[in-house]
View 1 (cartoon, chains in turn yellow, blue):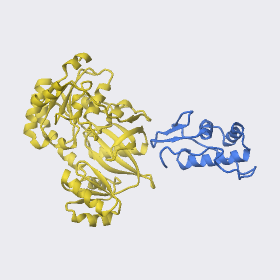
View 2: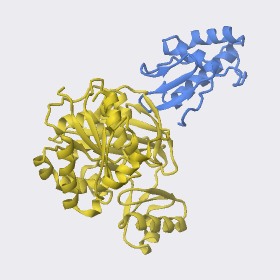
View 3: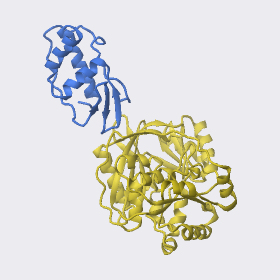
View 4: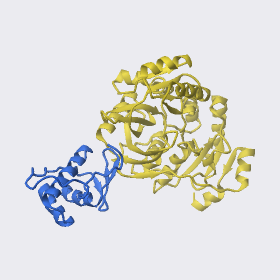
Length: 359
Length: 105
């Protein structure tokens, strides 16, 4: 494997709903022969992960997606010039459209990505997923899109109670009553805008698959995980790798149907009664539990970097089952100078840490 | 199926109502890929579900997974835990049924 890679990663806020950037960076470092550099791209001086000198070699703040593609491109060109990054792994749903649009310019700046096109992103969006599933015969919970609070009552009548109220990017709440559904509708709309997604609730177990498609839309690797513990927001806080051939076969068919390039997370519910899997979400990036996949012998983030750099990556070998993760929070202690540097210059170079690691 | 619920198998937990000479305990086929520790922790890699078996359950499972016939496991259970054969046979039958209900046999 050609080394060392210089890779930039976004999505570094790892608070109660951790973004995938730090797990992606940890996965890269988990490769025994890793000798590269990892540049964190943060949106805020209090994105928690940006202070972790054991994982990142440098940090640069970048403009929020709402600042537009032009500002983002200018900042990324600057970062590329300063750090020599060759590959960039975006990990947040809300930023992907911008990165997809900037792909040609970034390539010209020497920065490669392995991400889906804008049209592929929209095909699997939460608002379009039901149509995609119907078109390809994938089982999916009955879903209604609501643009107005007045539509909630009628939709709930068709879907039954309880039901799930979901935002277009994030957030999902289980409403047991119409009143709760109305409250969740307003909460989700205020945070993520319209439409708000109402979905039939399925009693069952949650399973996730992280997968990676190459530039031809073919599956390179996939790891399935059963959630063992959830936060009140429904995020996995513990999980274990498992291998149900039916689930992996289904995941493979979905990736092929999407002709997906890049990482994605497929979320399934396995109904208690019928034992059948329903696809409930496709997230167009690595999940925050992706480090588990790397430790179970499928280092999908590293494979994504290699594919981004046009290396030949054959399908990954089978992963180990029974590998378990439990997430826990740690306090990272850092000197005030780190905060000062990020606040005043938007940059932080972990020089001492880099020297310590010999990179 | 509920997560980490113990299939019974505690010989003392089931009744002793059945008489000697009741139907033979069924033969058992246990998937090879189930991961099992001697302390009674069982992991099904196909579903990701885990189970905890009590002492008698672990005793039985360890034998059944290695192909011991149910009748032979019954005799071993009766000897190890000092119970009558008919009662042990009932317990083995119940245990095997629970394994089947959980998709473990």
